[in-house]
Length: 67
Image 1 (cartoon, rainbow, N blue to C red):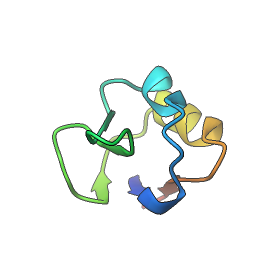
Image 2 (image 1 turned 180 degrees about the horizontal axis):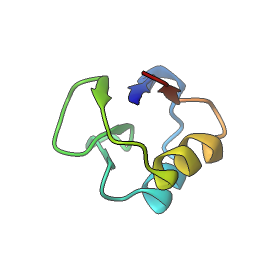
Image 3 (image 1 turned 60 degrees about the horizontal axis):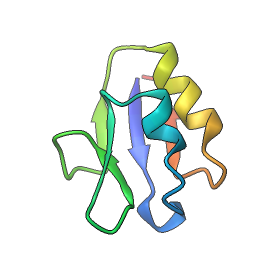
Image 4 (image 1 turned 60 degrees about the vertical axis):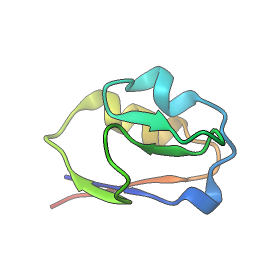
């Protein structure tokens, strides 16, 4: 699966990090980013924590793309 980050939708609520801290991190301004990467899209092995983080996002700043 691919994760797509939409930074302009992020309100820095922190829910994604609470669900999947090994995948998500924040820029200095609090906006979500992928851990150890500045890319907006990255492939990951299917993980329920990532799905949970995307579902918890109140602004749909995280999109899951099945591949």
